[in-house]
Amino acid sequence: MTQHALIRRAVSNRPRLLDLFCCAGGAAVGYMRAGFEVTGVDIADRPNYPFAFVRADALEYLAGLIASGDIGRYAAVHASPPCQAGCALTVGTNAARGWGRTHVQLIPELRTLLDATGLPYVIEQPNGRAPVRRDLSLCGEMFDLGVLRHRVFELGGGWNIPQPAHPKHRGYVRGYRHGVYRDGPYVAAYGSGGGKATIPEMQAAMGITWTDVREELTEAIPPAYTQWIAAQFLTHERSAAA
Image (cartoon, rainbow, N blue to C red; front, side):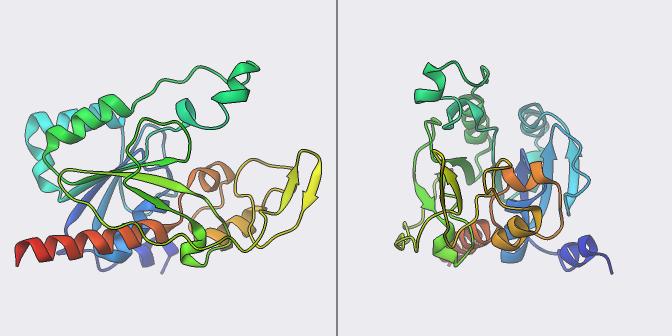
């Protein structure tokens, strides 16, 4: 049985989740492990995505589902829109130096559409200046991972969960910073060179084995994050229905 088949099996009779801007499925696998059947949408072809996949503009596709009423097939929506408009590479000192390109901020339009679905939703972004509420912040140290990969999550559609404690980091992220090399228990799962993680190191550190494409790994969030979020959500839904 292929790795994709192992991931896909036993998904019948589960609540359905729409995974927008899905990339290779780091978030999706976490939702699946918690109990969801997942469909991904991305503007680029993603042959490594391990679930049902639609190649489309995510905002246009979501608007179409709302207009047709087909959004009702889903229990929740996760969205990981492009982060470049609000990340460290394009704001602050880097922006002042003229580094990076101009990027379109999709989050306001996305939020309007997500609110129109009437469904619970999650918007995920890196730490930065993206216009999202910081309802939840997660770190790899919370899950004993080999990356820090801090991410913030806006929880919309009438639900919320408590913020877990943020454990003290055990040391540095391995690699060069300002010409100084530091060793540490975490790898840098972004970019290349300068002591950045190899592909096998990124796979092991994040728990992602179904893609070996560097670009997909550097953009992914560890499935442990969304598995934990989804478990909290399903507990919330069961309590509300009781």
